[in-house]
Length: 418
Image 1 (cartoon, rainbow, N blue to C red):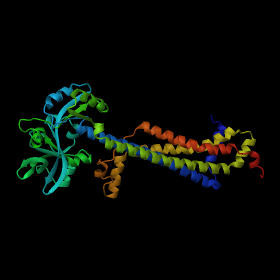
Image 2 (image 1 turned 30 degrees about the horizontal axis):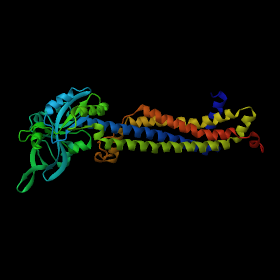
Image 3 (image 1 turned 180 degrees about the horizontal axis):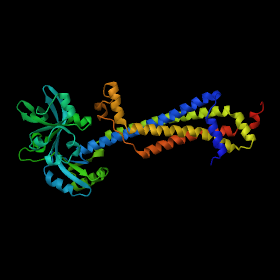
Image 4 (image 1 turned 60 degrees about the vertical axis):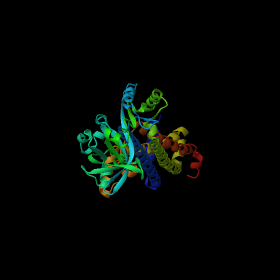
């Protein structure tokens, strides 16, 4: 425990006199460095958590937790199979789906897209999609009269409600002239905006039966689906549920959970997060070295004072604690300032983004590069505690060498020529 004498001397040394101005400047730069490092680290971790959360919400909200495919083309007994899977423990629902890659064209413009065919009742349960329809409604979709597309695709190709969008599938029919692709035009009856570029730019929703006909899953008496989407009660248990479904269905099916299907995206986010954590910790480490240099200079400047304190009865431990307090105060104040600044920014990232975009006159983050149209943020206070602990630990460790050096000063040598 610190005595009143040790606290008084330490705080007196922190108030540098004019001739010690350089020491004060170095200490201030150390404080600013620690504050900026801590604040930046908190903001980066919060944004990475937000991006991961938005990706998970978007992917799960549209693709389901587990996807089942047949090794043969299509799943014929999809209704009975969906009902059976829905009875398994941990499964919330199981619905059939038709999907396929196509080329979408409109007035000479074309783009690749993924078509997903859903029954109207099944589509109603996709709240992420239903709540993000910005134009049109589901009444026409329920009657099987048209398609729903993403806003980015509509803006890029100049499509409006009521326009006819032509879908071209490479899986056509064989003729004497060769393979002819399937071409069919559909009326655009709705436009959605999820906020994730991959979906807003490349997803087309088609009524289930119409998608069956288009992808030839209802030819020659067949009645099939491309896959079955399974929603679990808890998304984190999707891998265990996928394993259970695989054991139930046997070797004729392929089962994927959402983590394995999108492992590349999430691994990239995790790697970026870890790399940024290490890089920003180096900022705090550099600021800690500034604490060392400022304390060493303070020890040299206060050498005579230390000698007098020692001759008056101060122990080496007491001198050491005085200088540890001097350095630790810089670390503590810098960490507190950094935490407050970091949390303020982390809780207001979207407002800051909008303000910067209004000042600069253009989008700050292109969603086609960053997957998302906004900058999400999610503060994890457990991570904030880790950052604070590491920053304080580095600041404390930085004070040990200068404090030990001060404690080892020989009073006789310091006062020899006084």
